Image 1 (cartoon, rainbow, N blue to C red):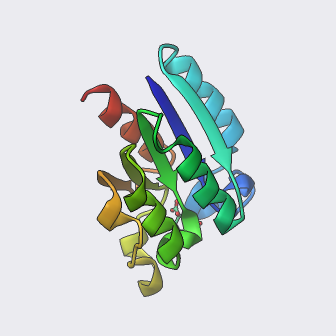
Image 2 (cartoon, rainbow, N blue to C red; image 1 turned 135 degrees about the vertical axis):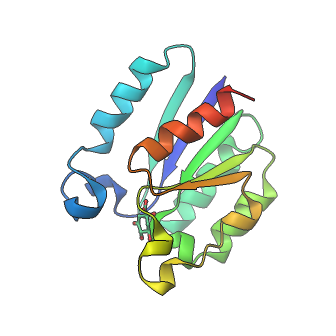
Length: 139
Ligand code: DQA
């Protein structure tokens, strides 16, 4: 089973960025633990701060992978383009967020991703990614 995690802007700073909200672990450390815990899954990871690069990656993997775990970060709340890409591809997308975006500022309550997503998992810290992964495994 081929699954990719796609992270949007500023998530390369996890572990350093607003640690009260996003925690102290870097995504690389977390990703290595996740790969070790699920050795039978072909798990890959892509991060970009650039909207078009996220769309390119969704299009690249979106007709051959079994699942996409997408945290579009701030673009979640602004990007019609990423929302359209999620709808255009065949691979199911699970939208994830580390924080509970509904418990934060109102502009974070809007998502351009959710309508095209298979499901949404948010508010469980980095565990949100693992829950999304499990949702693909237990299909
Ligand atoms: C986030 C929530 C977004 O509102 C924010 O812009 C992020 C991270 C999260 O994972 O909680 O960068 O997607």
